[in-house]
Length: 363
View 1 (cartoon, rainbow, N blue to C red):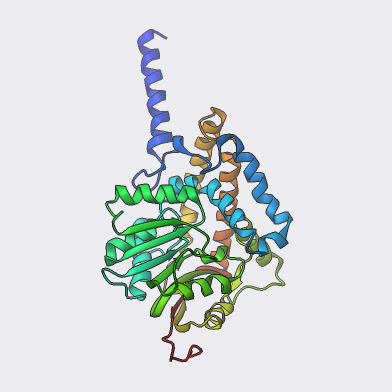
View 2 (view 1 turned 90 degrees about the vertical axis):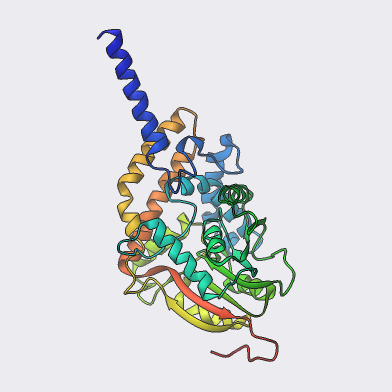
């Protein structure tokens, strides 16, 4: 082969690798590239060690049932997965029902806008995002409503990513991000005009504790909406396959334990909320929320090859392959949970903090 042919072949291979790694795959405006994958706030050489530490929590189940241990557990998880989520999924770390004729991104935005419409947020209102991640929902909600949104996340790396995205979107004047534990929030009593949580309070060891904190910081009369991860009325605790699926979801998503749909409203009332509305947004006529996971199988294998190559070359941290593999297995459990109808990530509950003279126990 002459030198010209070698040059052309080399250029073709280099171009193909660049396209495969840097162009194909990254989600939502190429916000995170494969070559930038990291372990969040964890140094590159400790990613694998922290991955092993994450799994060790499940060998000590009593520790993930206590409020003092959960922050470390969840923080470790999001250090490990945040970059992979951004690269392979997008800036909104949640699901949404498929909508015929709409892209996944459009369906996600509409799902987020529905949350803020339910709490009737208006321009100038101060709204709390409980468990904001890198701020995908926050930005959509601020742009849609004109409200000032304050997000809280346990993970420092997510705070940095959210602030970066807020600035790039030109929404940093409406969006504020705070690093903190939503079980002990650094906000005064009665300081928010509304609040929402989108698939976030599932990380709390006890739902009552996070609901009580949200109740505390809301002004009387304010509304709160949450999309909760739950087992549905189809789940059977004596069915080994059902149990396997739910445990797979818990272990792959840093959950102390999934709750039953039947417990959500009772917990909200227990802390003082009046329940305005409750509905599983995954039920028909909603289209399957898990269809995106099914369609992403080819993308997973492509991405897994990319991650494996980058880790072998020392570009991605050692342990990234393990984390990516864990997330793929978890996606299978989530799909099985959706297909069987035993799991929903969008059990919606809308609550209101009553005024002092109102009956807190009203249905």
